[in-house]
Image 1 (cartoon, rainbow, N blue to C red):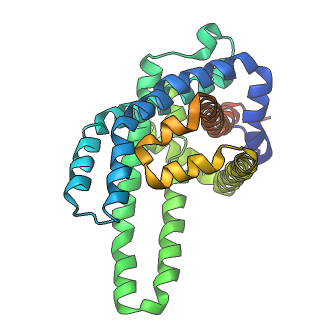
Image 2: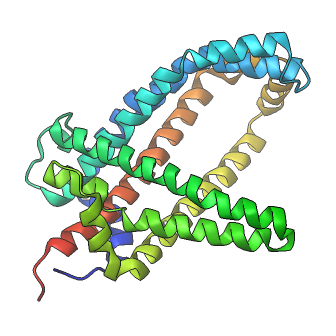
Length: 287
């Protein structure tokens, strides 16, 4: 087995984008189709929901708000399907680009058995996460009930244990993709000697994504402040949320969609590339 490098894992996404800029553009397009477009469709229910909430003064029992919530719930299947496809198609393309760089056709994008195993593996990890959350919630609740001053410490300990458990099975998706099978036990075993590096990579990715988000928000706020029509948009949002889309205009909406798509795709690429790179190193023979 090979060794892991946190620095190499954190840089894997940047190196992949530099090596495959056209593929990254194609992944952005794919994300827009499977991740953004469904959310735009859901605006048909989301905007009325927000308008009803503001009109009710925040009353969750308001009849109009309850009706808007029921309408929004009918879009839940579309949201779940969009999320499932997003976590399989884009990370699958990234895994393929790193683990099988010769399979370049269609910019590494596929919808096949490997993506299916990847999606099922992600669902398995999510299920384990929910189970772990429920198991850890009991002792935290007991501490909060019988020793309130220790509640923050117990909560922090529970979160740390949950993060540790998720990292132990974090190779499951990429292993499922590569091996066409569930690999929870194998991930648990393979990650054991490398937990310090996995924690460094996870923390590094969090800092990178948070930094990117702060940069985008800061830049967006500056652009918004310089926009002569910004005051009209803000006023429309407060007075008539249902009409804010029209007040934004096609140019602002297009720019916003491009930024959201590129940033979200970049986040997927950075995470998937880091874990694919580490898995490739684990599979490499020891020097």
